[in-house]
Length: 226
Image (tube, rainbow, N blue to C red; front, side, top):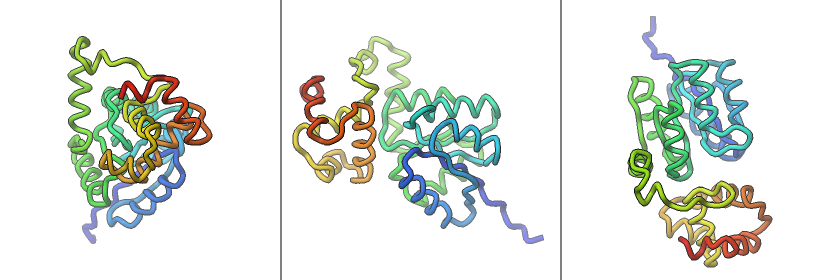
């Protein structure tokens, strides 16, 4: 017997093909990690989970048709022992709390490096919950707001078309004339993260270009409110 530890079998779920393929390649290079499936939305994620029964699911939260929160709940309904780590490009309170309630065992940003991902996978396999430091304080605020409906966080006005607070912030900065690189520097995140935000924003508000996005931001008072 070699005594070799079995690889951690991972299902990767993300609606953006470029990010999905890049992350799959990254995970494939990590010793002891095996990508056993990929999915582009929550419906595919549930099917892939039941088909491959992975050890851990890396689950994007913002996806079309069936989002990551719904998919996590559906997977956990099928298998109460399922291990799901929520992946997000930003820390949005509503989605994070929803993922937590659905049964996610951890939270990582998509900016996480290879070693961070490996550590998270190994921790979850050992039964631990993991939360990326970049997400932790937002999650704490979300839980506090849920317990205290009268708090400022809980009473914040709803944003139009399902925009998250971070997406609205990025849209406001677009309206101020900042480039993706300038927004990334302002928010201290990668330019790839901002590009992901912009793609989600354009899809939600139906904008074809930045000019339409700027008009939308002013029309909905997003520049003034941020």
